[in-house]
Image 1 (cartoon, rainbow, N blue to C red):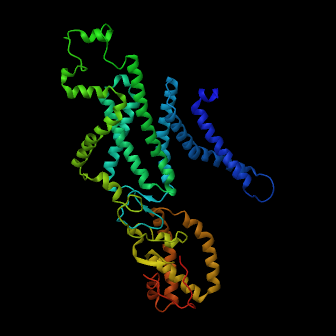
Image 2: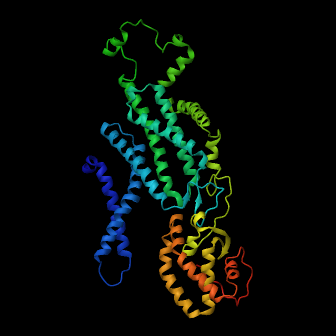
Image 3: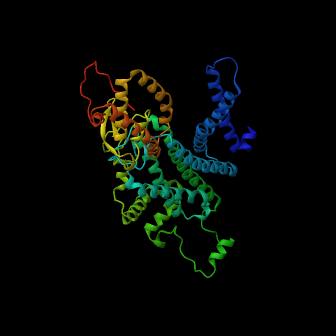
Length: 448
């Protein structure tokens, strides 16, 4: 326990690594391997996988638990508060990095609005693309408010600046809440972890500043300098005595009440909530000058589809089988692959170009004329083509496959024009727009 208190950062990282290694070891024991004994490469793989699980999955959960612990048990010791702040900075930096890494494994197209047609399992952006400036600005305002409260000592901040900083944090926290509500689903639950931590950190920071102000006020440091102190003597030079703000007649009843309000730290959250609306109005006014819609803050979440707050319905996705090279190639950039139309395949609508139709027509005639050769070629293609096609995840890779398949496309055309009386008719009827009822004796075309 003493070691943990002395080295909290190293202890948290070591705990995550140990948890990951234990998880990998448990999986290793439960797995059934051929033969007996553990093989060296298996143990090495398990150790590497356990380290990744510890760093990228368990450590974020440990940081979340620490932030929750610091929120429930506020610290008064200087070293305790410093440790809390450093864990906050680690959470913010690693949370942003891990969120970007996690998004790689999702098919969320942040550049595609609900009006665009996507392919396969892709989903549209959860934020309307035209409202990105609004969401980014309000998030930056929240970050600036947090940095002001976190880095500047409270004894050097006027109360009104503290309240404005809290208002800025409210705007940033509101963006986090909207993001969580928008994507809240079991599939995207891990993407809610970082914004949830941001909300927790904002609440901790506000409460910490309130407690700090009360401590300074109790010690007399948050009040105006007393007469006879060096600060009070310096302030009294060449100045005439003036009534204090505690006197209701000094500046008027309104400013007297404002001063009393700001001197009560317990009222800061409520005052910040009131000041949040003028601050939001200023931000929206500035954004309107740069072309943003006044209602972009609301439309950012409603002008979407596929999400909880979405108010639009996107067109159905086009499907192409990721197991077949020609079908994948048809999903490249339109200027390269030259899509002709859409067609039906296994009940899904797919992108069809000439290369795909030629390849399917060639396989059809091969199956009709030489079924034995077709089975061997089919087996070879299934064995070698599937692993390659599964690696193609971007339009640029699809373009490359399209160019690599060009020589084969010409070979297929030569065979078709040599064996079929009407080759173009056979090519044209591949992948119809709809699948009409067919007799059971008719053999289903194989698809590329």
